[in-house]
Length: 115
Image 1 (cartoon, rainbow, N blue to C red):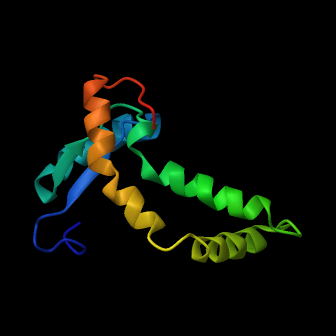
Image 2: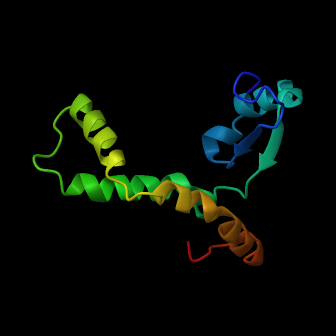
């Protein structure tokens, strides 16, 4: 965090997924808590995770690929190529949707939303 955000403005975002809430992870967070700000996400909330939308978009592009990737290296190459096929501004649109997603999640008191 100190390398990427040397200005001290970086935030560590944790979604409380089971691996992130382990004893080891919690101990590490406590030991390093002075190194960054910690933004608490609602527990296990895919509604707030734009990575899920990105994966869905990648899979849609890759399902149309012919022939389908056969090796892990073929898959990696295909995913990298597919990322380049995103419409212009797609990722920026996802990022800009975060305030609306967060407001929806707050209105739902952490429950499911339409996202």
